Image (cartoon, rainbow over all chains, first blue to last red; front, side):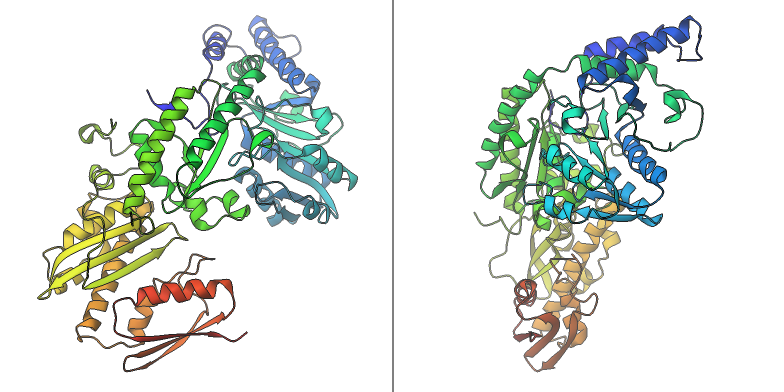
Length: 382
Length: 216
């Protein structure tokens, strides 16, 4: 069996989720139609609205505030471009350690005449609140995350939303990696827009939700009919939405507690390997399923490939592994060197990860890192 | 223990490493250092995440032994390893003819995105053999040679060669004395890194090396 520690990339759908979805592939294959639809339309509408209610309840929103989109990248684009277009002008900010979808969406707005700014972070990935505060002049939106996708840093969103709202700007929160692991209350966090995706919580791929606080106006990316209130027209992915609803129903925060213990065990084990350092914070301020360490003297793709061939998978921030041949912008932004980025690996746990897997993963990685260090220019001397 | 099965490896799947690349990655040949090498060369940098160091033993103009150390991905390890095998037994002149495409071919192909690893290995070899020509007196140290060596000295901040941009001011060569002048402030943090890298690049050459930084 392969040990799967790439759950921040995507998770295995829960069998119960798949079961629910199959029904909407095989039997109830309609799509929500007009006001008085036929039986197929109505069945699918019920499924979609039920899922919307489950999701809204989970984050303390109302169902009207939830819009289904195809994935987190679409949610990022819709939220950021949608707000920018609705406002017409102004400054859009994001932190330096956002996912590429957010950073590149903001960059695009820069090309289109909007002012943009990337807010710095500290050595553990926490947003520099002073840098944020002092760059909010004419700001219309700050886009950031709850839990960092790569190094697991959990941001102080309450403090951030206070600063952002004080200057009259809106806050878009990418909660995709935190959702299901960290209890989220949109009212308490006081966010204006927020995205959550199904595939990171054992739901299906190809479906995500964008929370848009009542009263917040944004323009759609696509023009079409009035489905999803015209904010996201087009075909409704009914099986995926039904599966998303089920996945949210299955969220159990005891899983997060268990994962956090295993996370700490894995961090401790890995830090026992000489010349290894942790990226991101420890304890409560770290996503319960995120481990990210940098091994000096070796490169991530090599580690990954060796481990893959031995039945252990995860991901790396090395340039060699990226399609653009660029090292992780997150590791660089927290002050890490190129070597820290190339030698960084992210291991992400799921509710099904066992202690036995954690120990085995550590043993494989230790062996592989030692092997590669024997080849390494730096680590060759034994 | 390993899941790798050469016969079942599907070259089209994953990132497209050939069976041979995988083989050399998993079981690299000629890893290590040669004690008392005839010549060494380093190419690449930790900044780009790809670096190799070659150690050659040359007797009667024939490469009798070659070893390497690497810092990099699977393609980096495989290209360096296969290169050492390719050159052992060859004369220096024969080895000079090896181009990066020959290394790619020897490995049964490389994904396009990994071609630079073969380029790096070929650069390393080119540099080592140029240094060998200097050592044996067949080549004079001139600016062309200095630039060949400096091409592999990388700015830790940008990941680009020190020759890129206006960092390189020029050099003065008088017999064994080589003075390299750089437009880099003396007390900047990267000055030390450049000095170390340049000294290492000239390793094995009988030169009196001086590196001049900008007065700040």
